[in-house]
Image (cartoon, rainbow, N blue to C red; front, side, top):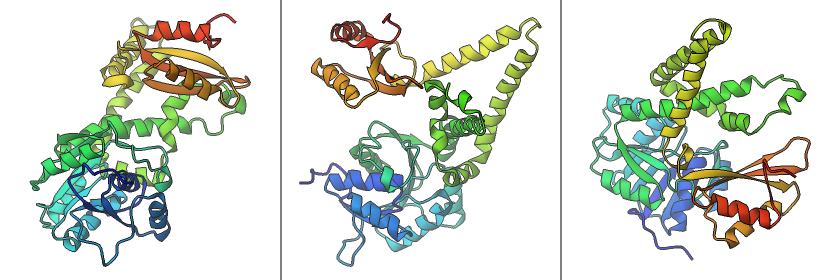
Length: 363
């Protein structure tokens, strides 16, 4: 039985059944919204339909009230224009990760943009496609709405909230500058760092821990998609890379002249700036005084993680975050629990009393 919809649109058409399009379709379908799907790939369309993201359009369908363009960035402009013509009563939005270039191209084409809004959900995964889609992908994630000629911004904010996301208004230039820093630069740093691993001796790679995995996690993203994204936001990304290059050059200079006065201060300043940057991030993703880490050692065998989580659930522990790491060459794993600082000491005592081992304790 489908839940009653909180969405302001009862009929939605989605063009593009990749990660974002399928995830939106799943979330809307679960709310009882009628979702039709379109994709140039029959197999991708069939897969999204099989997952329950919507149905293929039919002649019996009523006209959609909202059209969502979730195609690769290099065809968004053409698809938006085609959708505005094909569905003359519908609001048309796109979910591409770069906005200014798309907006400029639409204006240059003398397109009537009173029924168009550029948007960008700040949500994703390392892997794309319908197979990676999730109905809760947008929950508690920012969703940027770029104000333009349309008067439907308020309706779009309601739509975004119906998916559990947090609507944010920005203009296109502000958005592109922001994502260059918080999304595009990290992708390049992750990819370039991961590329250094190619050809490294296995003995070297066996030393890799959670730190390297954290830095390189998003390097597994689709290169073809990212070439499109980076190309569309090149000026803002070049600005960020130039600033980063200056920082790297300063560190290199300090390391090659450690005998010179002030060299260690340069290193300390760079590292402290990183601490300050992380602490500036909102919520649990930054260094918050509200949270603390507790690392539990578990045996590397089936059921151990479930047993730990069940025990925490029985104690009504509010788990803010969790990270699992395996120890190379050892039959144990490390579960890094993020807990409220006001409860971490009590939880640690209960775990030890129940036979769990806390990392850093004596055997």
